[in-house]
Amino acid sequence: MTADGASVAYDRFVPGNGDHRGQGRHKYDPGAYGRGIAEDYDRLYRSIVDTEAAVDRLIALAGGGPVLEMGIGTGRLALPMHRRGLEVAGIEGSTEMVEVLRRKPGGEQVKVVVGDFADTRVPGDFSLVVLALHTIFGLPTPERQICCFANAARHLGRGGRFVVEARVVHASDFVDGQAVQSRFSGEDHVELQVQRFDPVSQRMRVSNIHLADGRPVRMNSFSNQYTTPRELDLMARMAGLLLAARWSDWEGGAFTGSSRRHVSVYEAMPDP
Ligand SMILES: C[S@@+](CC[C@H](N)C(=O)[O-])C[C@H]1O[C@@H](n2cnc3c(N)ncnc32)[C@H](O)[C@@H]1O
Image (tube, rainbow, N blue to C red; front, side):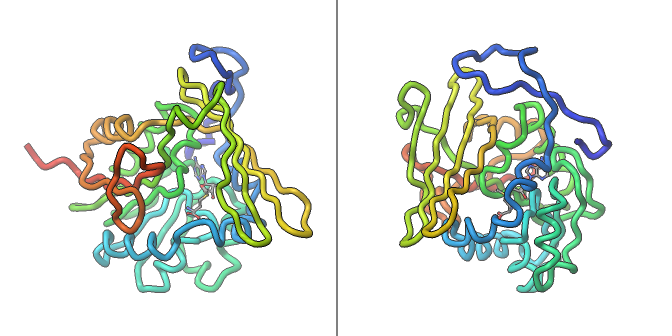
C-alpha cells in the first residue's frame, strides 16, 4: 500500500525474461518483509552488521539536526541516534517491526509513520534522511525507486543530506544466474544467501538461510529490484540531488570496482 492507500502492482521475478510486463502481476506490500521477520530480526542480524560505525557516521552527517529513517525497522540505527541526543523519526511499512521498536527503551519517543517510504510524508524538515541495508531494492520497480528519491528530497531542509546504503552486484558472482554465498559465519550461527539474478530485468530473488545450533532452520525469502550505483545517481538527479560522497562502508573506505556495497551521500543541487 502507498501512503494514500493505493496498491502498487509489480511483476513477479521471471529469470531470463527481462520483458515480462503483464505476467504474474501481483500487489506490492511494503509490510511483507517486516511481517515475516520482526520477532527474529534483532537476533538474526545482531552480529552481522556494523551498527556502531553506521551510527557514528550518521550522527556526523546529521550535524545535530533531525533525522528521518526510511524503513526504520526495530530501531537498530534510530535508537542509538536518539540516545545520543538526536531527534529521530521514521517511516515503516510493517506494524510488526514498529511494535518491536516500541518495546525497547526510548522506542516510544521515536515518531513513526506507517506507510511506504516511496511516498509517505512525515511532517517537518530533516537534516538527514537515511535508507540503510539495501532496503531501496525492496521497492518493486525502478519507477518506485525514483519516487523514493523524490520523497527523500521533499523531506530535506536546507543543506540536508540523503544517505543510501546498498549492495553492489557483480555478474561474476553468478553462475547460470545463481549464487550461493556465506553472509556470516559465527560459532553457533551461519547465514547462507542463495540468489537468483536476471541481468536483463535486474530482478533478484534472495533467500537468507539461517542455521543456528539447536534451532530450526530459519529462511527469509524476498524479491529485489537491483539498481546499480550509477543508476541510483541518475534517480537522485531526477529528484534534484547530487552525489556528494560514496564509500565502500560506514567507516569511509574507498569505493572501488571490487566493492560489494556502497554508502552514498546525496545533497541538493546548488541553485543555478
Ligand atoms: C532490512 S530492514 C532494515 C531495518 C533498519 N533500517 C535497520 O537498518 O536495521 C528493512 C526495513 O524496511 C521496511 N520496509 C521495507 N520496504 C518498505 C517500504 N516500501 N516502505 C516502508 N518500510 C519498508 C521493512 O519492514 C523493514 O523494517
